[in-house]
Image (tube, rainbow, N blue to C red):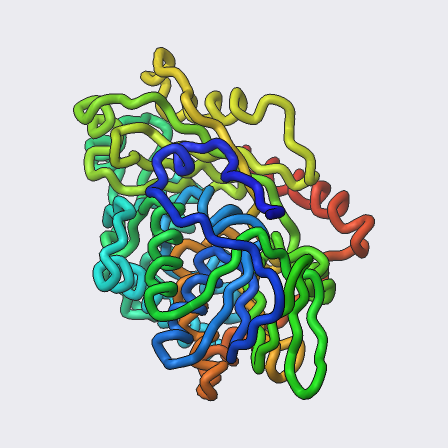
Amino acid sequence: MGRSAYIPSYYADTAHAAPDRPALAGTVDCDVCVVGGGIAGCSTALHLAERGFSVVLLEAQRIAWGASGRSGAQAIFGIAAGQARLERLVGAADARRIWDVTIEGLALQRELIARHAIDCDYVPGQMQVALKARQEAELRAEVASLHERYDYRSIRMVEREELRSLLASERYVCGTHDPNCGHLHPLNYTLGLASAAERLGVRIFEGSRALTWDRGAGRLRVATVHGEVRCRQLALCGNAYLGGTAPALARRIMAVGTYLVSTAPLGAARATALIRNRAAVTDLNWVLDYFRLSADDRLLFGGRVSYSGLDPFGPARATRARMLAVFPQLADVPIEHAWGGYVDITMNRAPHFGRLEPDVYFVQGFSGHGIALTGVAGRLLAEAIAGTSARFDVFARIPHREFPGGLALRRPALVLAMAWYRLRDLL
């Protein structure tokens, strides 16, 4: 059928049973064809179906096979670029509109989980932590700006003494806590969205890569190996895995490899002693560490990236070493899972939304902030397809440049640039 099994990971080993969805064979007709079975695609399909559209969703592998089913799974406010850079890109008014959508995305995620009874181990709470004085100053400035300029009062500073009571690590000088953010089991969440969409009539085909799209007899046609979807509108939600289906989009994103490990079960007492409020945690380095506890009391830890496009030697060992720099008390604990995947980043780390043609929409480039933002992106896509595009168009106004060097040289150029940021993390 052309689809691969889920890569071995903690999430794959603890995923709920999912139906064996067929590959597309023959010709099907619908109002909208959605390409990509991650959170963005499933949310788009679900929100379109709620509006009464007939929808076909094409997934090249299996639902949530890519980043949506493998990630660090922290639902965080804002976008990866940060509000200050976003204001420089689009101005204060549009930056505020985009901010409001990201906060809506956090609420929408909880709403979808509750409304569709999605069992995905959602836990509220997320912390950002600073390792040095420069990062502490940046963190305090950000919190002050969010309070004063965005009236976002959910986030608060956590001073060193309180931080040490919450996080069993000597590595950090201060942090923040935001109960409006959270973390979850991303594969089970996405499977839940897909099931909810199917209950509303969405037809999902797995093992059905969208190869090309064109027009014929006044309709769009999306071709797969063994079939064709004829539709009035098309939504491209494949992100880093879209590949040659839309080459124009590939020039403005880069697939970056990221790696995670999970420990053996620690037991409730030992796990909670590490992160007493069980919040998700990220540090402020450019090549950041991010970690959280699972529902079965493991530590899930990510902290390696590959900008070269090649898997670095021994990513599991390297990620474990980063984990022990944070929690040396886990030296006796074995690693039971190690996995990786690709995150789609843009040059400016802002999401990339837009249209290739008036009836061909896309969303991509979430740059590591996709767990909540992809879900609300699906809502905005459905709004735009239904004829109300004002909120989608705010995101579409964010300017994006192609990665320098063309398809052949852009990755070496990025590797050189990232070497500077790694050095900056050490200063």
